Each structure stands twice: as C-alpha cells, then as structure tokens.
Image (tube, rainbow, N blue to C red; front, side, top):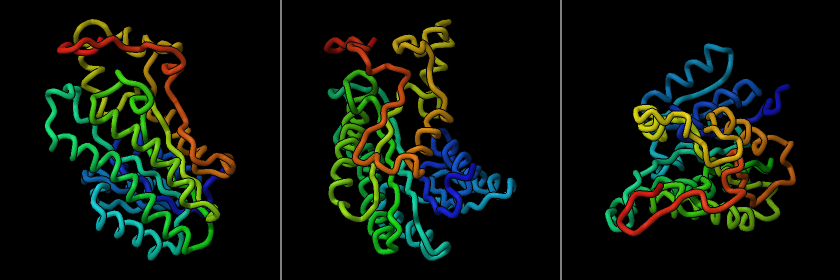
Length: 267
C-alpha cells in the first residue's frame, strides 16, 4: 500500500537512527525524498533508496541554520514542484550533565538544533506548503524527556518540552491552511544517540535492565518510531493536529520513572 504515493517529503537527521528508518519507510510507501543531515552518510541513505527504485536526494545541511533550512525547502519545491511532508527529526542529546555542570553555550547549541531547528522547519516548510495550496503534514521529533523530568539531560529535556509547545503553536498559527503540525515523543530507542547507554548497560552485565521501567520491559527500535511518523505523514491522521504522540512502551503511564538527588546522577 503506497500511502505516500505522489508526495514529496523532507526528512532531517536522515543519516542514521530514526531519520534513516523514516526515510526508508517513506520510500517504500511511494514518497519522493529530500534527506538532510550534517553527516555525509546522508548521501549513502539516499543512494540506497535510489538503488531500490525509490526517489531521494541527500543533502549535507545544518537543520538549525535558517539559510540552510530555507535552501532545503526551496530545493524540494524547485526540483519536485511540491512539498507535502516535513519531518523535522534532527537532534542532539547534549549528554547527561546536570544544570550545574552545563554552560550557557552548551544550552544554546542544544536549543539551536533541537528547538530552533523544528521552528525553522515549521516556518519555512509551512510557508512553502501554504503557497502551494495542497495542505501538508509537519512532524517534529520531541521526546518523553519533554513531558517529565528524569528521561534526559536538562537542556535536552527543556528543548523537547519546547518542541511539544511549538507544534501546538504551529498548528494554531497555520489554522485554515490544511497543514497539520504534530510531534512524536519517543521513549528509549536504540539509535546512535542512545548507544552509549546500551553499551554501558551491557558492559556492566545489565543488558536485561534496558527498558525495565516501561510495561513492555524493553527498549524501542527506530523502525517503531518511523511507523508513528508514517501515520502522522499520511492521510490516516487527517484529523490529528497540534498533538504530541507518545511512543514509549508505556513509560509515561506512571510516575516516577527515575530518582534524582542533588549532586548525584539519576538512577
């Protein structure tokens, strides 16, 4: 079933993890893709899609830079004459240092990529979609860390809380345009960003503890988040707007899921 047949989609952070999984899934569903990442590996993802008879372009771009985002949107529209989907997925973790250990410059860079990046995607993709007059879907990657404390570093968590607020604001500001704006809030997903946590657990002989705090008792896979992105990109979610879709194995169905003390690492 080609749920995205005839659609043109931008995916940022597409060189690995959730972005790569979403790009690959969107391609199987008929989308033409413009993929962006700061890593040159984004071209390999695009080439693999083309080798599988899909359509994709890979572009090295900084999703937190306004000129780069504006050029990315223009490329999609100029090359393919439309833009239907924008998955603003690029992000960084920034580590788990406490508020008292992080600098203002640390926060500025994390917020630039994780929050300003989605803002720029909504701003420029939203304007382009509106000008084309076909409606569209903008999806931003947030996190359960944006819903409750203890699931990520302070700046990361604050940035993702901002994304959740941003999609609600974006949905309202695009009222009447037919453009939907939603977020996905993943729980613990095995990607390059979280691999150090997986490695640490396995090295300590505690691999079976990964994901133990959620009712499914496991970590998630990038493909599972990609499926949520496909739902929000497709017409199956035509009445879903301004929403933060939680995909976390049930982690946030109860509290608390971490314990912290001043001056100590979360457990």
